[in-house]
Amino acid sequence: MIEFRGVTKRFPDGTVAVDGLDLTVDAGRITVFVGPSGCGKTTSLRMINRMIAPTEGTVTVDGRDVMSGDAADLRRGIGYVIQQAGLFPHKTIRDNIATVPLLLGWSKRRARARADELMEVVGLAPEMAARYPAQLSGGQQQRVGVARALAADPPVLLMDEPFSAVDPVVRESLQEELLRLQGELGKTIVFVTHDIDEAVKLGDKVAVFRTGGVLAQYDEPGVLLDRPADGFVDGFVGRDRGYRKLGFLSDELPLAELPTVRVGESAPDGWSLVVDPEGRPLGWVQGGGSVEEATVVPGGSLYEVGSGSLRSALDAALSSPSGRGVAVDGDGRVAGALSADDVLRALAASRADEAA
Amino acid sequence: MVWDWIPRNLGMIGGLLGEHVVLALVPVLIGLVLAVPIGWAAAGNRALRGVLVPAASVLYTIPSLALFIVLPAIIGTRILDPLNVVVALTIYTVALLVRSVADALGAVPSMVVAAATAMGYRPGRRFVSVELPLAVPVLIAGLRVAAVSNISLVSVGALIGVGGLGQLFTDGYQRNFPLEILTGIVMVLLLALVVDGLLVLIGRFSTPWTRVGANA
Image (cartoon, rainbow over all chains, first blue to last red; front, side, top):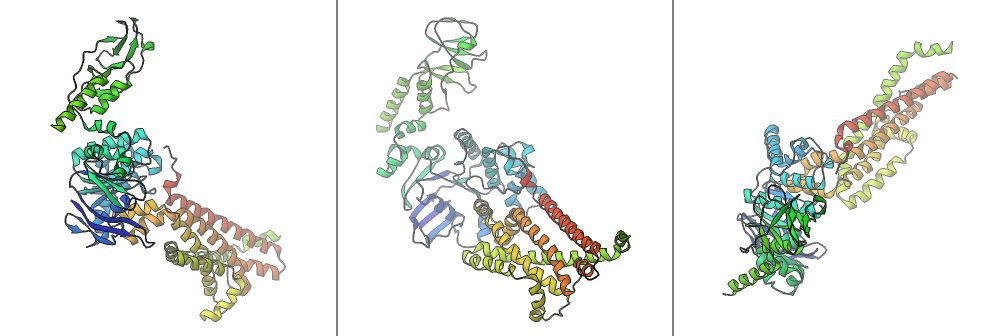
């Protein structure tokens, strides 16, 4: 558990980066610090591993004031993932990952074995071990950064805008990966970002900072989107917050039957869903006649029954060319159809439950 | 036949070459050892850099012959002592390398230094295992200039009677024997090329990461 008690950081030029911060980071959860630039989120993060010393107040990790004891020892017990990975360009991937174990005095052999193990954990091919960071893509470098932070198995992980420099598709896969890893590892993670979407996606709790280093709201993401504390938070979480909130609802949706056809079969009039021999959706065809691969129109996003949110259900309905969203089971086989109306009805039902 | 002079004097030429190498390169090593901490101090402190780097540049403008002659009075050596040349060339090497070291360390990405600190490196170990290795390419460039410049300056030492290949110039000039002068010039040139080449190779072998193609 990490606690900020009355923490203020004033820089020598008089700027107040963090102003009277009181906040408790729950152990074993992901806490996201989010806010516009100059809001003190990164400064707050860096006070946890003493990269920055507070001017007033105390920061404690597991009850211990971080300013007591040796700074280097403290840092070796806290994983750190920096913006753009911050890898050592002159060290191989394996040696980058082995950094903290070696600093802790592990034998070279044990540190390297640990590095190889972590490469597997974060999904890096073993042949990359002997390469240098410049030979890796941005997404791969970020994975190395995460592996390096996890190497000595620290209970606390600090992540400073780790995914800000990669493209949106890679960012999304890194986010999924982080959530999967966290499901296995259960670390206390503090994650800094300026992206509210990233914050609500990753955070078990989200702390919204405003310019001047003041904490504006600290809540679970669903609450943040539902009941912003003030105009600033409302403006920061954005106009789409109603839509984003659907991401936190995952009620059972009634699925309609969805007739499917296969390539080579004859389709009825109107839109029909084309599936492969295993029953996985390939796309849509319009109008009757024999189905040919060339006439299949790509489908929209898919809603996975059981794990999908109302947001993914609504998106499936809205992005489908036929207006009927495709629901699939865990194996990717077609389970049924849903419409935007179904999603809105489920939303209304969930509202009614909440009010009751 | 005058060309006979070379094979007949191979031993003497070899001896002068050895002296030349020692007089030119020992100062490079001492200068490097001195310049690294000075350059590190300059890289870490803007005010200090404002004093140290210009001071080093001024040192380099002192004419070598003057320095060879003035030094004995300052450090109490005899005027013919080879130590004068070693001390003078060390001063030039430090003057050249302080800026190189400061620039090289300043060019290490701040993100990498911050990451090293956050991993739990203490400043001394961080310097040796992160900052210094990353400074090697720029440092090697500075060392090449210092080594070649020293090799040429040692020749000047012959004017005050200190050994080295420069003696082939003074001797050949006095005896009006152009082949000896030519031999001296060619030997100094070859030495400079070989030392420069060796430094390039050392730089390559110590920085394998700079030669990998980015496939990102």
